[in-house]
Image (tube, rainbow, N blue to C red; front, side, top):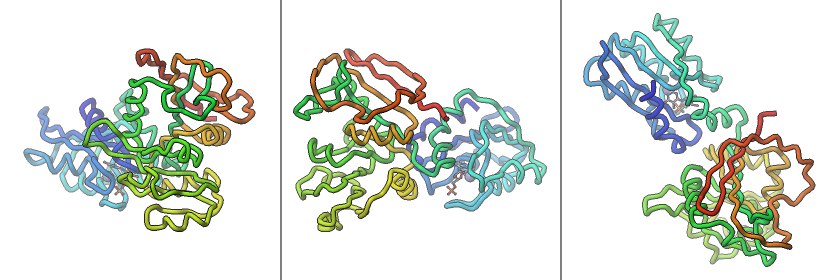
Length: 339
Ligand code: AOF
Ligand code: ZN
């Protein structure tokens, strides 16, 4: 199961609305096949593992990180493949929260034994998938960088050099791991960000999502050079001129509607990069899963640009999950407790 979990871990973050899954086939104590689910719409892990077998899998055991699916989605049920291959026992480390799936029952009805094997890493592995299925919204990471005195930008609005190069590199890893990246209209206009991943020349880039409000788009914005068409929510009809360069949603949408639309568009994980009015909305509505704050050893003094603009009651119920030192910066990862 360790190997199956490692296979699944390799594809975590690249399977969109699907879970990362790994599978290993063992027969007579010999390791005869393995596979992973690499991309939504492609083969599931069990089929990939069974296809890879160096000999007949009849009578073999399969170790799968997730209960095999039993429904017709973009691909046929894995239970069919397991049954047809003549697998004797299925070891699994997690149940599938997708209510279309009841693989254990289907397998048991065919006389195939299913055995739960506890693995300490699967809860973490399936946190994003479970969040998506259970809430029909993306897994949300709020990210902010601030000075020691809690400001996210200088008084003049410049937010470029708050955190150091190690923190900025870390943010590019975050971008690589998320399907979408969301900012507000002020940040778009002030910073003209490109919202790409810049780790190598072989990166995957999150789809840009802009909550533009009443602001007006401009043709020379960097966002239009992004490899993906940006998804833009706006109340300003003038922006219709950009219909061929962006996916535009006109009107006033509340956050949960925006998130539902993004999830339907297969954006299963969303990195929210701000600025402060966007952070305030997500925090106030408790619409986040992880909160990552980079703290830099700077003092900006008077500046209206702070992480939260509202009047929070101080009751966010966060759990400090991880602390990391990035040279002179500190990275804090908090998790929202499920209320
Ligand atoms: C498995 N093995 O490797 C994965 C599973 O649209 P489809 O056909 O790709 O089905 C997606 C659903 O299948 C997904 O919501 C989850 O319940 C399950 N994913 N199941 O047996 C796999 N990726
Ligand atoms: Zn499946």
